[in-house]
Amino acid sequence: MFSRNEIIDILKDDKQNEWLFSYADNVRKEYVGNEVHLRGLIEFSNICKCNCKYCGLRCENKSVQRYRMQPEEILECAKHATDIGFKTIVLQSGEDPFFTKEILCEIIKEIKKMNVALTLSIGERSYDEYHAFKESGANRYLIRIETTDKKLYEKMHPNMSFENRINCIYNLKKLGYETGTGCLVGLPNQTIESLADDILFFKEIDADMIGIGPFIAHPQTPLNNSPNGNFTLALKVMAIVRILLKDINIPATTAMETLNKNGRIIALQSGANVVMPNVNLLKYSEKYQIYPNKDTGESNTINNKKHIEEKINKIGRTVSKDFGSHISKKNSF
Image (tube, rainbow, N blue to C red):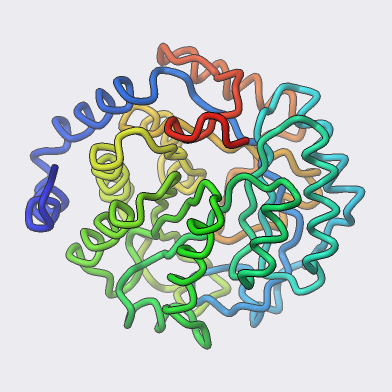
C-alpha cells in the first residue's frame, strides 16, 4: 500500500491528517467491523530485572513501591473479570524472576478453566518457556519491540540484546501464538525514518496485534527531562499500521489517554478496535507506573467497564461478546 518514502511523507505532513484518520477508520470498519474488544488487564508484578531508561519500573528506580501478587490474587482478579463479562484476560508484569515457568503454567491452566482467551505480556523468555505457556493454554503474547533502530534500542535498553528481542518475536510466531508487538513514539533521538521502519517491520512479521504508545517521560528515570512524545504523531503511526495490516487487533492505549483526555476514543475513531481496562485490585494498579499519570480506571471494576462501554456506544460502536481473536485466527482461543 505505502512505500517507505510515502510513509515518511505522511508522518511529516500534518495536512494529510484528516484524510489519514478517516481512511484508517474506514479500513477498520471494513475489515474488523464496529465491535470493540475489551481485554481485562491484570498487572500482577511491578518487580523488574530490566533497566529500560524510559520505564518507571526499571530496577534502578528505588522510589517504586514494589509489589508481587500471589497466584490466588491473580486468579481472584481473573474470576471477577470473567464474571462481569470479559472474554480475554491479559497478564502483564515486569520481568520478575519469581514467576517461574512452573508457577506461570499453573496460573495459566487455572485461568483457562474460566473459558477465556489469555494474553501474556511478561517480556523475554526462553523458547522452552514460551512453548510451555502455549501448551498450558496461553493464546496470545505481547512483546513490544519499542524501536527497530538497533542503536536507539541498545541505548534505551542497557544490557539487553536487540537480536534476542527479535528472536523472541519469531519464536512466538513459530509456536503459533497470536503475536503482538509495537513501538514507542517520541523516544529521544528517534527519527521519522525509524518510525517508518517500525511500521514496515510490523508488516514484515505479519503481526496479529500492534500497540502504539507515545513516550511519556517518567520523573524517576534518566529521561525525566525529555519532552513527551506527540499524541498526533503516535495516532498517525497507529493509523498507518491499520491501513497496512487491515484486520489485526490494535488497542487504544492508556498512554494516548494520558496525553489527551479523549485519547482512547480518538484512537478508536482512527483505526483502533481494542480497549484494555485495568481489572487489578486498586492497591496494586496505582503502583504500576511505567509512566506518570497513568489511568488506572475507577476503584470499582464493574463501574469502570460500564463507563467504557457507554463511551464506546456513544460513538456508534458496540462491545464485542466474543474472544476477539485476530480475524484470520478466529478459532485460536
